[in-house]
Amino acid sequence: MSNAFIFPGQGSQKIGMASVFINGFKTGMEVMAEIEDAISFKLSKLIEEGPIEELTKTENAQPALFAVSMMIVKILEKEYGYDIKKNCKYLAGHSLGEYTALCASGVFSLSDTAKLVRFRGELMAGAFPNREDCSMTALIGVSADDIEDLIKKYQSGKNLCVIANDNSNTQVVVSGTKNGVRSFVEEAKEKLKITKAIELNTSGPFHSPLMVKASIAFDKKLSSNFAPSEFKIPVIMNVSAKPLSNKDEVKEYMVRQMTSRVRWRESMQMLVNDSEIEKIIEVGPGKVLSNMLKRSFPEVNNFNLETVAQIEEFVKSE
Image (cartoon, rainbow, N blue to C red):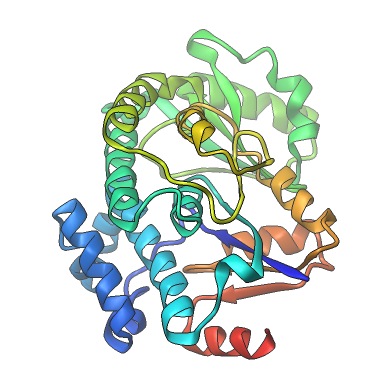
């Protein structure tokens, strides 16, 4: 039997989320030092002290969450002797978390991934200087299948609205222009059984065609400065909801992710359907992914690795 590690994306950040790993483990301190050196930014101070408004900014939240998840991975490996290559069949991450998965799989080094995550965050944060031009909204009580037909007419121009995150059977995030998202949500409320619609506090219309300029800039950076290594563990990619183990294809998927749907529900369905997967473990702050997983698949055997106690309990269970 095998496990699958899943890594959270933006939205799981909180003040103090790295304290125990930086202060209690040599490995944690080493991971943070390498990341800070790579991005030339005192990330640990921001994580420890805030303010939360600064930590929540896309360009800061993404490397911070990456750092915490990778500290846990490295602590598991070096301090507890957990062999991730031996014990994990697949890795996956939600949006930003996909980069953590690629790093944990050995495709990019810790320092290179930190640089990529920081640059990606800056591009995403700066893509729309006027926040009023765009929007992202979470729809509760419906699935992507429920809204697929209705959203087809909102595919271009000022009324652009697309499915950004297919998160679970009861949660979808749509993204696009302000007019497009508002118009679609109003129509969807009338015609579909939406429990709640929550406009998200994001710095851009992520995972939509409106991010194409940012994706082009990211592609140039990725192609000229970073060389992927072989996969130690296949990573289920957001764009395809299928495992990837060919290093020659990974850059294409990373670039496409910026403008494409995060197929998280399908990715989790694949893990749940795999008879060799015994546990699905969320590695990093919070329980966002675990909560979505349990709503869609109540029977799943799920662990969270956010605290030392949880790490020790998990290691004992292996």
